Image (cartoon, rainbow, N blue to C red; front, side, top):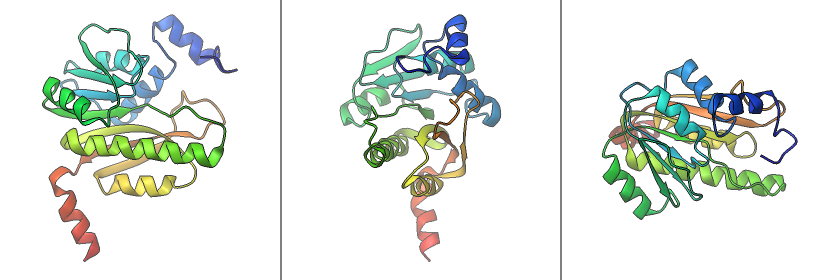
Length: 205
């Protein structure tokens, strides 16, 4: 990581512990607080390169693990990986074939930021909505999701959208997030699944 934050205490700890990125501790923190992942869960990790969340997930579940990213992911024993766009129907079909039942979807992905605040925030929201759409297609009813986002324009609309898909939704900051960052995580549990249409209709009446 080439930023001024590259060698802070969390980064140094990740190197000592053998993790590929400091973000490993964010997932560990979230799961400790919300029990998102159970020992038998099958989990898909979106935007998973370089693979630190997959490393942590291996300690959390004995179920199947699948990672997908536009960039290559160095092999991790027992983990299925695909290089490609998770919005691509062909990639989604490959994931379904490898993992017919998906209990949890996690996403720590973020677009490359340009520094133009409004433009970057719009790209973040687009990526978040794509991850949510992926979960709607592959996640089992009652499943869970964790998704990184950044607070800013349209964030509340995104959070409200997630609330129409899951019965339990919280927006949190991880203790491993850098000070001053607008980064946050949407923690969503108990996917409504086939009951979504009924719930939307009930709100409209």
